[in-house]
Length: 208
Image (cartoon, rainbow, N blue to C red; front, side, top):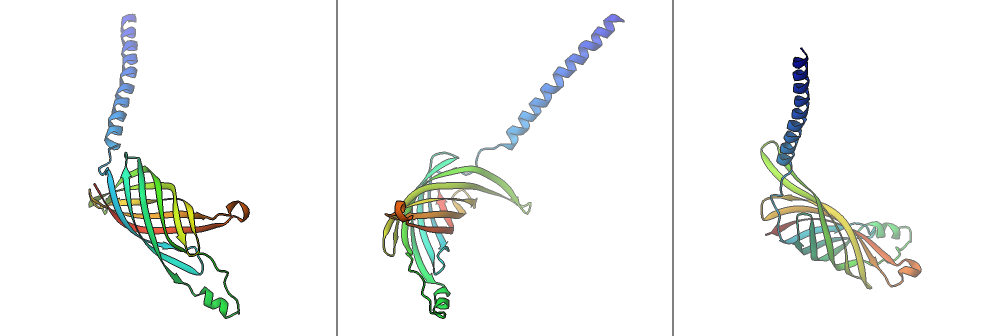
């Protein structure tokens, strides 16, 4: 009787040790199947964008731009250069002020600018579209600086923002960007001479 009890106790201990090991092995196999390498991981990327500069209440800007980006890894890249040219158009606010014999304070308007940014790509996803086709994309963040030419001055700039990208295939992708721009004047420490702008852009790129 004592021997049978000892055998049962030994068997119970062995089962307790065996099943957790099997559970961990299954969890590791499951994790290996879920976490996958990126399907699209380019090195060189060239893109064009159509954008909007909406912050100025009197004069808005519609921009065209092009950029080259060098990708170092799946998470980091360097947007070596992006050049923007802005076409301005006036809103009706100035005419409304003239009806009250008022004139707007003259502000500088952005003509064109160039930036260079570090790019961080922390989130990559794979999704299903209507349970029919797979889509791939990523969310990215950028920060850097550049230089801008305004109507009456030229200024260094700081910019930061982010966006997302959807891949159409190994070569082409579509993206949306939103970036805050700060054009810094010479008297920033005296009267905080800063021109703020927001750039919203949609575009496409080819990468290889």
